Length: 383
Image 1 (tube, rainbow, N blue to C red):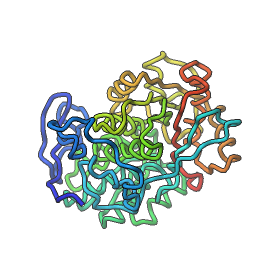
Image 2: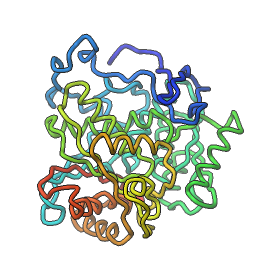
Image 3: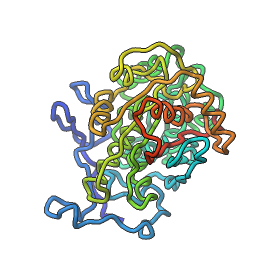
Image 4: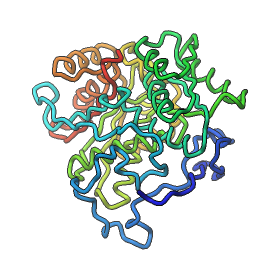
């Protein structure tokens, strides 16, 4: 265990302003942009006076996988204060007859709360615990709220979770049964976020905003997806990674994780990052390819029209020669059925990335022989 250090301050990469760490730290910069950690740690042997080439990646057997994703703590600006042993989800080869050659699914739906959002939740609540936070508040369509609620319970921290009025009963139950308080909001998903932000900004007692869209700790947690993928593949980076894309928590986490591995000298390249969006809620795909008709009521977990980190997502696409595509309901529903019949019991939004895999191949973005990893992000038990 590394020596205890003080919580990292926050900084704005857009205007350069820095904010001291503490329970009263802002959830976004005064200039309106998302904040990041002032410190972005790498393993000690990759310090500026030690060439990355002198610091090879460890053998898989040398990683303490009993620590879960915190086996990569040296990459994280947070200590593991709040954990349920999450991480090292299976990386499973797929049936080539159904999904094509050289495809692996990472089974992110086997986390304690049933979704990949636990990566961000363990980091975010660990940050909250470091700071002495007594109450957190979050807005979510379901999975992030359930994850934040569960890890808040683990930490002994109160939680208010703003959710759509029509949120699925299974996800409301996951929030309520761990002692968190769901606050139902009528209207769109954006209305839920607006109501939460209004509460945070108007009431100093509302709580610390543990937003999966804004809080940099959440993205530090989701970066561990890339660390695990690389380690499970003996540090061989895939040609491409296809993820669902709403607020970009997993997409940007993957980007940051693979970038950190390359900077550390543990890998030698970045994968192409490909995002799968829901038609009608596809600001990234529309920015890249223009507006298109269609709708997708199946992938309810990524119905985001105005992602907080849109510019960062577009930069990650550009820097990795990536892309994004918007899918209607039909191909996602068909992919969901194929997943279930193949033994992968996931919720509907999880099917958008496997459905996009076929679309990217049809468009020529991916060749048939490309080596691809696709995360399956949420459990069908929460459908």
